[in-house]
Image 1 (cartoon, chains in turn orange, purple):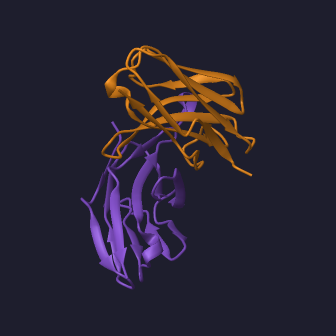
Image 2 (image 1 turned 90 degrees about the vertical axis):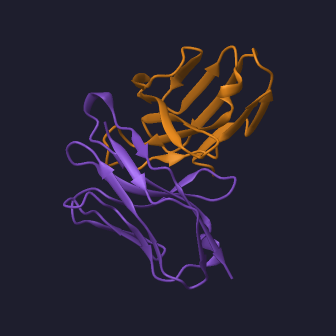
Length: 114
Length: 115
């Protein structure tokens, strides 16, 4: 059973399009995250939700909009895609919002914007 | 703000060699420290963690000790295997509070182990 799953695994699209990435966790966690990994493999947090409430919103263009319909799901919608959005996007979850809890990561979604 | 600095890679070793990947951090308060590993084409997996000073995290032969006095969390393994080839990330997580916690990652160190 996959703990944190993401769909799709690969996403190739053209500039200006709108796309969504979906994430689901079956661990019973109440906190979920989106991270972006750039071409040099550097990872940076984008958003975090706790019990469907947005608690972390980093300096991310407002073309990116997360949505959490319930504790087990966190989706990422991206409007008007740009070349610079090409990256691997990872979803993660943790048992709580405290720093000591480890985060469990999904397999990633590789987004390529052409 | 919080930051993590890892030794520059890539690192190439022969099988059974000793591994050290240096990691130092800057943070306010008492963060938790983690090492994550990313195998090719996969997501990150937790390798080990330590939540307070002098704690030693260990897993699969890897070890790291939380050193508050030197703000370090160096990763070591006595004898690496080809299957250890991956990218290793040092990370910290502050206590968070109402605004929650986030992992702040180092740059990652690519390890290649040759037979």
